[in-house]
Image 1: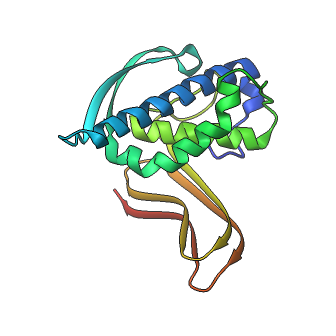
Image 2 (image 1 turned 60 degrees about the vertical axis):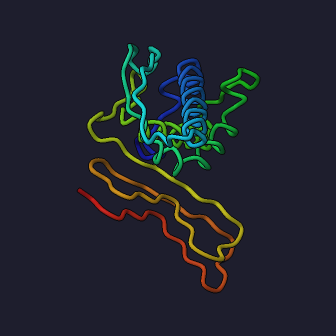
Length: 186
């Protein structure tokens, strides 16, 4: 995912972005549903191969992916929050304003999570981006930090770039804010 400052939602257009949001929203929901089913299953399945029909706005075609349910578990809270923020666009009850920078950040953040879980870049048609260099983006916004807060935390990163942000009104005693934490870079 490109840095939100370089992602031009306006250049892609409202119609293409809306279709992209619908796909990302649906995929995030499917990932959460599959994770919940596997988590609750007696055999505790750790991964699953799936087939996905990618819409034309992301290049089209059928692709396969291997979902690592540990990745979904780590991203659950963010996936749910971003789905909620983009729900009205995905459901068609609110018209998309591609010039709104907050919406661009939300689209990018959801796309980055879905890309990371599916291990597949999702590049809008007409978007200039190196598909071999996926990027992770995370943002945490809280009123007060009383413990540890990370905008983006990655266990092992093999390729790409990462950008994490933490925004807070106050840091309390013992509070620790980390924009991006990467444990291992391979």
